[in-house]
Length: 109
Image 1 (cartoon, rainbow, N blue to C red):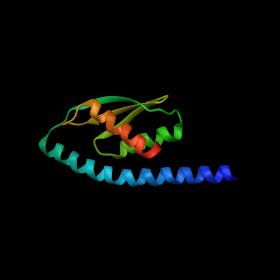
Image 2 (cartoon, rainbow, N blue to C red):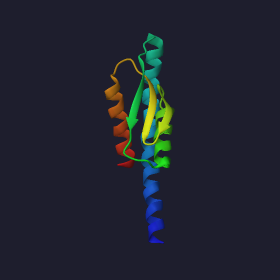
Image 3 (spheres, rainbow, N blue to C red):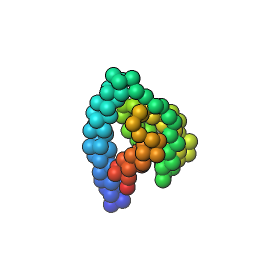
């Protein structure tokens, strides 16, 4: 019984962190993406991001987080690797990877 309660509150904490990080990210990136569209700037690239988990729920939550954020789309998931289309004009691919891994650590770390 205690184990179920612990798991419930652990997932509740994760979901709250997920929501708290998701909505500001959506609005911030939407603003930046609109600026890119107006200026006709884009530098699309595919990122290969390996996450330190094979849990399908966590992988799906991260893929959803990425896809809901304007300018990024999760194209595929293989094992613990996400393939992400990033339409970005002002940063290099490594910066985008670090930002996604940082979000992962904030939510699930």
